[in-house]
Length: 80
Image (cartoon, rainbow, N blue to C red; front, side, top):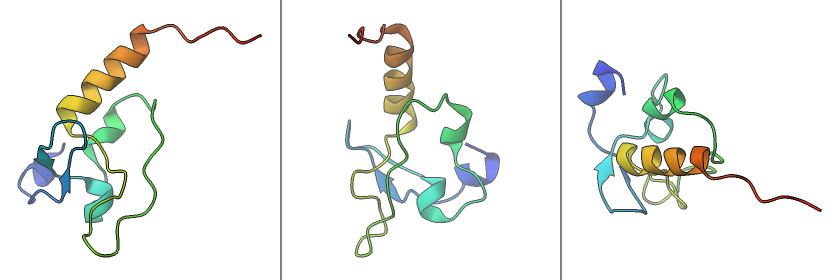
């Protein structure tokens, strides 16, 4: 997260742990903190029109880092 993003209010809730955090995509920021992580998950679709947060939601920095670490260290299943 950038220094500017750190001072912005939270606008999302993590589906993994319930923590609130700032999602730059939802907030219309120039860049989100998550772009610095490897792209291993699809980006959620558009923000919810009623709450301003994503339906499937982004994960908080802690949960997304954990998911990223697990996926980078788990071999993909072999395809026939």
